[in-house]
Image (cartoon, rainbow, N blue to C red; front, side, top):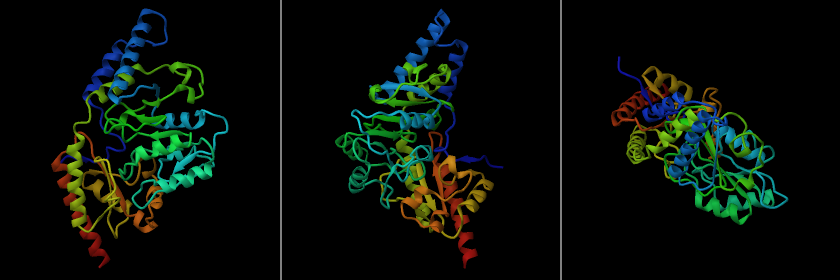
Length: 362
């Protein structure tokens, strides 16, 4: 029996050997970094050295607050962001944000996207008009379902002109592309080869975030997880030299899917090379997942946090797909270990399943 092929790296990607080694070294010297004795001071030194490495890898000059992952960082920023002046307006949330953002939106103004999944200057202007002065604006860098990259420079300029603060879910971007000039950026290490259960909230200016007490400069309570932070730093140290290679593979798969009668979601939009969504007309995503899984392929429908329920994708709906079309879309995502033969084998399986779907519909 042939080995299985993992094409769900946007959900999580395997722990890198360098990250595993760094974590084991840190565990061997583990002590509470807040303890005043020599062992605690050594752990603190290791933690802060890792923080500096992460800042250097990301080109970040602001504060780095370690969290349990992107979801916690997003919650922190949405609950505790404070504007530079009084009278902050309503929060603005784009219609393609991850559920980790949407669940904290409250009565947020919805920022619509076009058919390509990207926000527009007109949409931003309308949202700012509804929100009022100095809003918190939540717009991601890369969509986790489609790979669509938002117009990051334009968003930053619009937010600054409105006197607002920009919260960017950078979960799919960190370790793969340059970061935007946002006020807050949240991410999780397990998306780029670090361990699960660790991430960070990058804060340009700590004065824009209300403190909560405890560790992390008084902005997050709890004993710092130095071993996991060490693993995260080691994973980031490996760089993103593989992105162009898998981007080429994604391009070949796009063409193969179209040749087989499928549709590439947001085909002409700027997309990160690691994520693609494909529609197979005539076959529900749930049926596709069963077929692909039985054939030895790990793929998903939508983001990992919602695909288990197979709910209709709010992202695809926001892009104008009707319920039937959206219900026929699966996500394929690539990682550092994805090989050319993996993609070719998946394309062959797609053709087989699509042919069966057409035969049943005939």
